[in-house]
Length: 275
Image (cartoon, rainbow, N blue to C red):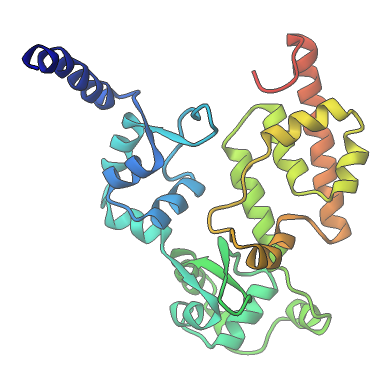
């Protein structure tokens, strides 16, 4: 037994030393623990690009370098400042308290696109609850105090009279924009854009079945907080796809542009998919 222990000790020591190397890759749970963040706080920090992901594991899970974690720790005010950046509030009542106004005004500001959700959840009554960054609400209150009282501007009155609700569209715009920031590869960018389009639009824009297989394989997972329970997932599922015709047209044009670059890359390398 003594010989076995002596032989195994250097292996464990080597693993610990490897984990301390600047470019060593850690999983999300380990990275969150090292930063002292709750799972939701860490997921939001990654979503917003405050914690940058390293190369993915073979199964697609995000990994993080120790150098990146040290960079985050070295930021002024860590960890309180980071927690403030990722703090979210749920629904109109909580959001209105942060904003310093009433729930009905908060709802109007959100429905008219002045306040952009950062996420969502489905409550036990299968109702969609939007999440907002508390820091952004405070910034809006300081920047637009006139919007917190008095009559609504004409454009908002027109939107409300038409029953408009820009929250889903504004959330998709934010979500897609964040996903595109994470990659410069044209095939992965095309996959992000294809993922937000209805199936009929993807079929029309990508007639080649082999290309559609590539895009499906590269499609990003649902955002953090997307419900797993089928009944709740059905409520939130519609949020993932563009709906107004002008929104669909914009993402369709962006997809076709990304595919032009992706196909050019394939022509130069002889392979489909990211290089």
